[in-house]
Length: 417
Image: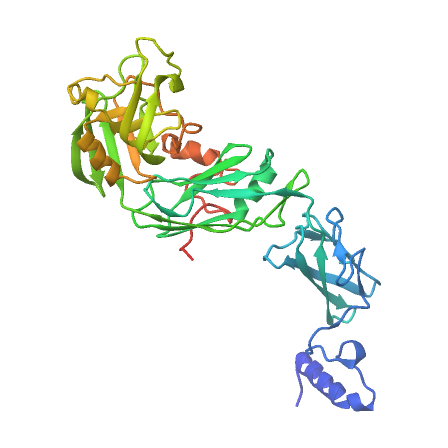
């Protein structure tokens, strides 16, 4: 009876292993370990250049791993911190050396696992744990708005303690800021300036959405010697979809809740020279009483346009002083003419109803006005006045990608925590 070559090899190995007690060491790894055994300890075959177990490592020095002799080659290296961030690196073609190509996180505990192989093909492993030095220059992030319930137009904000100007740093910041929602929606960050970025969905938040914003920026290098710090999570609840549309030409405001008209109100908007801004605005705050003075908007005291009035039920939609408010002095013009200095005025009863109906984050949209367009930033939340494609171009991660693409770091939101 004859055996195939593979069978003869298998039988030979079996005989040699069985004879190990007589001094045979064939078909095995170092110290007589069979190839099927767990990887051997490669501590004597691998060295970490300048890094030692339990010792603090400098942030400006790359992690380098070397094989000590020509009989051992490195096959793989993984370096992961406790936040789950993997340190990028490159392995030489001959397996003699691995060197990190990405920056180390500050104040982080790393676990490094090095896989090796000797001349006989036996696998080895070496592990190292070390901690990096804390950062000296810190980048803090302040989330906004404060926790609570908001309307469907409320953007999320992240304000930075120091400017981040280059795309690599901005990408690192965006990747560390995680927005999760239930239900899941598509959204993106947009850099307003070097120290502030906003997040909004492609469309208004669905009514009843639960939103959580978290940061994994702690210890992450952002460039220019800056390293991120920890930030407490932020949770928001989105209420009903409440949208008010003020038609400056028709002199009426239509208010809808979840698509259903719940009120139609006669209004007056800005007169010529003071026309109300067109576009989408978001309710910023509500003030039962405000003393409105013309001097705060650049109208000189004593001029024909000056005013100093007590105003009630004031719902603010721009920081420059545009409100929806009670204007009992102009009731005769409401529904027929525009006589205000830019605000949307209505009767005291209607203003009280509006004040009680809306909340922060609800939408107020002005149409058919002779005024300029609402600016996207700097005067409240005009974020929705940017078309979606232009909004995406303000993202360091998504700029240059097509809508609907799903890169590893896109802004497709995941189910809530």
